[in-house]
Image (cartoon, rainbow, N blue to C red):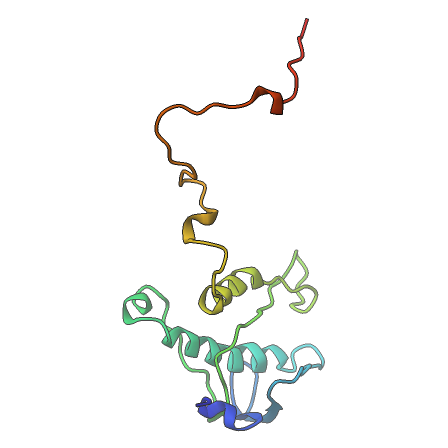
Length: 160
């Protein structure tokens, strides 16, 4: 059974008022690459990160157990009249790189950690038990003595 948010193809934002947004309403297509452009201070980041991404992050945090939620910061709902069609998503946030005051100059991502979380929940290991990649688990168990064939090794070289 598909999720209710997947029954339509739009993310609908109505009356967004985060930071410098003043009752912004927009319909965004789902499963499409959408690019936000505009002059500095026009509210691109406020709409994307302050409204849509923060609500998506809050939805992700609600999936954790109550025990884990007790250790996490509580996230407030964004200042918006209505958000519809939003599903949980992995957010690639932007951060300033260097001393430049513009936030769009560089984007630093933590995508590796998010992909590890994704694969840990979706992946099916087929290479062996969990200890297959552990360095602290002995790979051989034996009793008695082990013999080796010295012919397999490189010849000894004398150092003078």
